[in-house]
Length: 98
Image 1: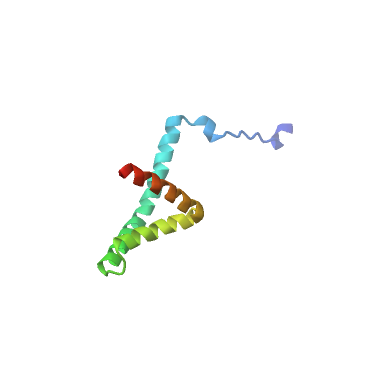
Image 2: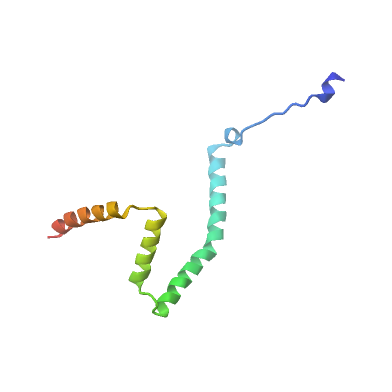
């Protein structure tokens, strides 16, 4: 009767029991599921751009610059540093072109 109240719990970390191949397969399956979920949004993004171009609300350049500005904002880029880097590269590449 002494052993009736005792529970044995065996805990295994799945990272230790799966092979690299199994991890790769699991990763690919998860990535594919995410990409499948994103696909409709990619189509919406394409249609949005197409509509703005067809209605002549924005040019391709306007859309490109807007996308770049959004990425800069998301990445919290320091504009002063970016301008310094741009000017440094611009002067180097202008010399190379001549």
